[in-house]
Image 1 (cartoon, helix red, strand yellow):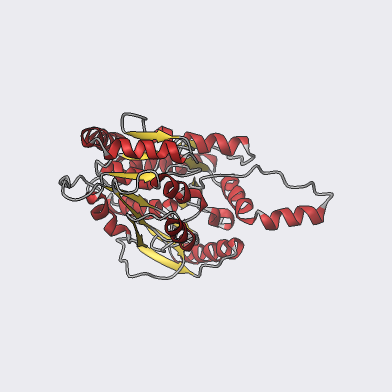
Image 2 (cartoon, rainbow, N blue to C red):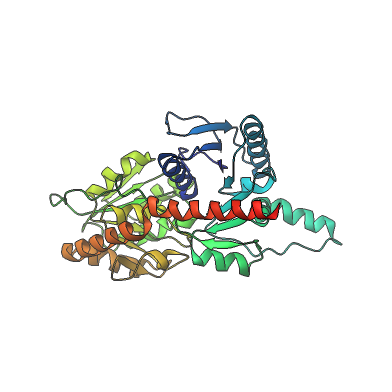
Length: 369
């Protein structure tokens, strides 16, 4: 059984939700019986595995409670060998069967609540950090934790999120769905961004960088989020003429967007292991991104993409201009990225490692009885 606190098909779903759906599909295709509990509303999607829906709530504790209750009901109807949680919703899942947790959180604050002898201040701290309190409990209770990057494993350890056992297994991508398409040579080069419109992704930095090269290419921004209106206003105030806001794009349309792009840009301020980069690399589309979080573990600077410092519009503009103006370099980096996907980051390879982990957890459970 897999769980997540948000639907993979929600307009504001992130990489953690997408990865949950991808893993479920891969496991089901490999012959495993997969059921999932998601918080949200049933969508028009028809995944090849069974989905049980519970209502989503803006209060993380209420969502976690609803997922736990839904999982308990399903387990009472049909037991499962193992439950794999992928977010803070794992905090209150049943103690049996054994559980694996994946940490997709791109950043974790230092865990430093006031002492118990200051109950009012401690309660206020916990209310302000409810999501992270739940995530911490979920990680602590899991038999094993999957860290999707070595970066986030180090961060969790340094900032007070203890685990019983941890292993680094990256996210994956389906190279058959995200595959290279014929090169597009007509019209202006297209630079593509795919992601949520929030502070994390650095779209404001991207627009500032684009001001330095507006007219040399077309920038397409695909996504949705609470800062979309602000970014549209910023583009207008900067006088940018070749910026297109695509709005929310269902994942099924992303390969077609990538097929038109010279490159994908992700100017994030912080990240864990972003799927948008894997998807672009799988399509042999080179990436320009920032040297933060787990990104340097997946993108080799000058080999499979270009890395720049976060928050630096001049450096970002220089990297973009370099690939926009050099199709041969863009092609070489894109082809190298595709090879990296095929050898390391296909979902088949990643799921094999996760299934091996499941086996270890179940054997340890049996031996401990």
